[in-house]
Length: 151
Ligand SMILES: *[C@@H]1O[C@H](CO)[C@@H](O)[C@H](O)[C@H]1NC(C)=O
Image (tube, rainbow, N blue to C red; front, side, top):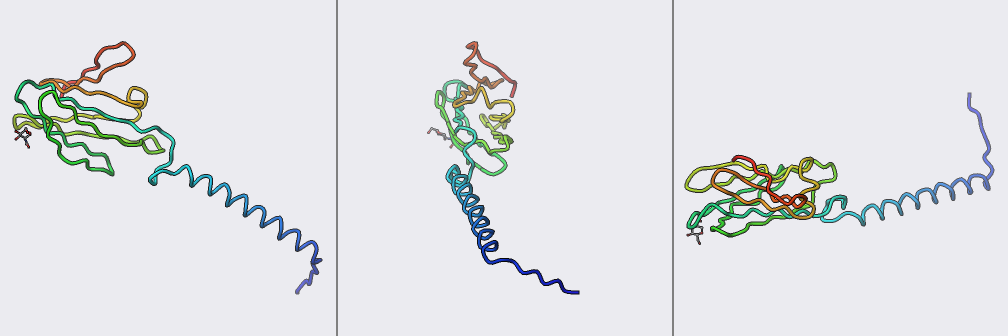
């Protein structure tokens, strides 16, 4: 059984206009959403700078190799007293982590240089690691003091 319903043209027209205005609102929202995208990442957390300073001793070179799940920052040779720095924008999910291999005198050590859940406050916008022969210390702006961890 086929029911033939006649829809008045005026009604159809106004429904179409309404639908179109919904679509244009949707497009507006989409465009404003896209404008807050920056380099493919949603602007939600500010850019962080992580500094790693070689304080191993005169004549000892530090090789730093930092990686996240998505980025490999390559190997950098830092002379005594020198500072290596990298920067990034944490992802919108707050799961960004950077791990660094630290090598000197032929021995490899590891440092969790940035773990978003741990460091989002103390690394906003900068944090400063100093590498000693037995520990890595993060400068604490609040106290001020150093928060050290064995490496
Ligand atoms: C690091 O730099 C120093 C000074 O330029 C250099 O003597 C040393 O060979 C370099 N080490 C590596 C592994 O590139």
